[in-house]
Image (cartoon, helix red, strand yellow):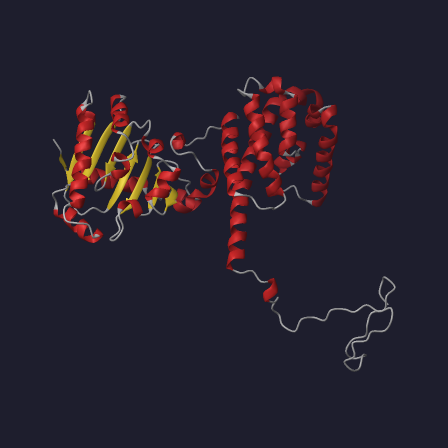
Length: 415
């Protein structure tokens, strides 16, 4: 007899025969499956797994941004409001700061904290406070209620509230493990970066001005040394990282390759003139259009004889015209080399910690536009603990910078 007053059917031993009839008042139980497999009807195909991984990747990226924003909001609220309320209310300063308008949600946070204490969920003593149990909207409410206290430190309240509004959709989606679209994720990342900058965390990476720091890169970027982006070809690079973003505002540009099309054909001569007149020093190293290496490269790519050499020569002539318009032509150097080209590299501000590099290797059957692209950041690599002790430096940026300098020494100037 079951707990609900229903009689369970007998098992195989007490129920002879294969009759499907069951006595009145009994409940039929499903028999266990003969095989250990869950069956093809419950399996995931390749498309389903791809969708699941995509969802997890987007949710993971969004969670990291939201985590950073919440931690920063909590730190700002504590730094501003604790000196006001703690001297009078002690450990209950958060409850006092919430006031009558926030009694409901602050008491809920107090209750959750007590439950977490009893069940051993507080793994870090630093989290044993009411503030750690407030959600992002509640932290926002504290800031809005006490805006006169925050106004000396935050320029525009509207910017903060707009950024938090944009994050609210993402926060709800991530907390409920629902699908997050790429557009909403991008919006959340932009809003988070803007909010962190507004709250006084502009980033400690000098090159963040040219190549914004990715929160995920900053946390787990040591997997790839100083490589911060990989693009399957130059078209995709330019779509996400236009030439103006790469070269605009540079104080130094060092480039080596065959024809340097990324700079010559995607960044106007007038912009180069203005950069150089503003103090930017430029060194361009082209493959000699009259060298045998150009002819070999033409054969590799299946180009007509002289086609590549003429293209390189036109690029050099264009850069000579740019140089002729400068007040200080010595700040704009053009040289050629005769060796076999191995890679193309554009090192922007490569002599300082804010340097950014765009690097491509030459493939036998692929033109430069079709070759994979690496984007490197100088001076911002996250060092693993085992490398910190051993003094290992496996960044790629210094390697390509050294290769450029060696090639520059072995080249000759263009008059």
